Amino acid sequence: MSTVQEIEAAIEQLPRNDLFKLTDWISSKFSDAWDNEIEEDIKAGRLDHLAQAALSEFRAGKTIPFPQDAE
View 1 (tube, rainbow, N blue to C red):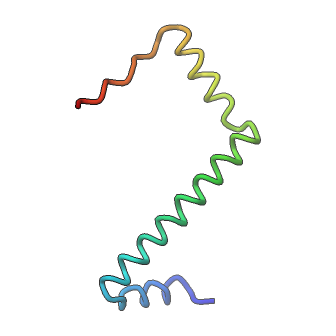
View 2 (cartoon, rainbow, N blue to C red; view 1 turned 60 degrees about the vertical axis):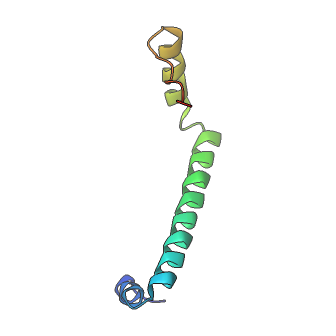
View 3 (cartoon, rainbow, N blue to C red; view 1 turned 135 degrees about the vertical axis):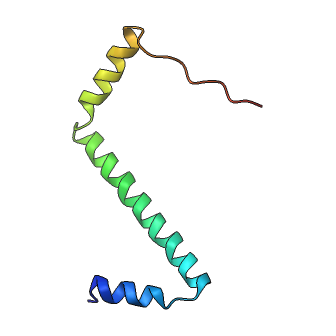
């Protein structure tokens, strides 16, 4: 397996189009990993306290609606 330094050096040598493709791929991988982590946290109940806090604030009238989209 290559080291991070070797990978960075190889990326520096990429043509612009390949760099953009790599950037898109990395972004997609990061998004997928983030989505999976959030899903696991939800299933495990690690975000329940945040949901309860948000619901409590809503029920207490401490929230404001999102602004309407300008069309």
